[in-house]
Length: 423
Image (cartoon, rainbow, N blue to C red; front, side, top):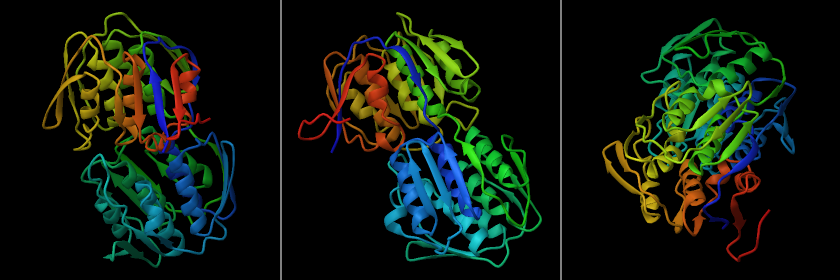
């Protein structure tokens, strides 16, 4: 199993190009199931989760071809409505095939995705929405079994904003008869990106990015060619890294408008940030100021940036409070940061972070995707060597992150268990 080895203490400098967004790419690739013909996607990140969704789409009968960061998917041969456990268990986002399969084939049998290291992420709102569109839903032997004649538009209220639920029902509703109104929906940029793609296909979706989305169903959709939007969480991770190492880093091919709250919090810590049209430059300062954070649905501070920001606060000048309001188990990286000398106390959903002068290199264990990133950030400033184990989590959401950091002068490498250099 691969590991990342870091020698800390280098101020990052240079330019990094941000990859396409994993969280935008997954539902957009799944939306290919709604069309006959070849869809072409560019700026697709080369990630484990992308490979997993490609395998699932191929299992369902789609033709999937990849070349570097370009993916072509043709679902003309869609002939299988079963998403099996052995494929779905790799990635929770696989549940997104439920809506398109029911809309296109009138039926679906999708394995329940199971647990998650950062807390329960129930799919009840997905099922409620599909059922409201006229599908019959049963849970049998660990699978969701859905069937419908023709889906029909409905007025659907989500008890809480859900990104995956919004995407799933939006994809189902574009081929439903009549009007569907989705209320209290998620507003993330990835929702807007999916709506834009659906509209390019010929759908009639309005209101994405607000709390109410209106969809007028159409009879069919056409294949498209589209570029995946930049990954705001990857950009945010490098933004924190520049500030953390007191470096000077330019982040290109990003969308600053998608990152306003991340930028705002970093500026509160004293970091100097220049905002361009599609770029950001961050310069670190000698004294990092403490700042409190509460994770919230977009446009609030993203839960996917909480672990990275916590590392910054671990070496800040005072005490900060970080409240996690999205997932109940998203402080599991704290015990690993303790091994590196961080002073963090957890009470309920709030972590009290007391800034220390120095973190120290140590062997640590990654527990989930964003925790992996936070441990790499900690290693960049730690005295001595940090070894991050179980980095397969990292490969789910960051494309060649060690190469990107190395290009910014970080002393970082990936090695296999036998010590062989990789990449």
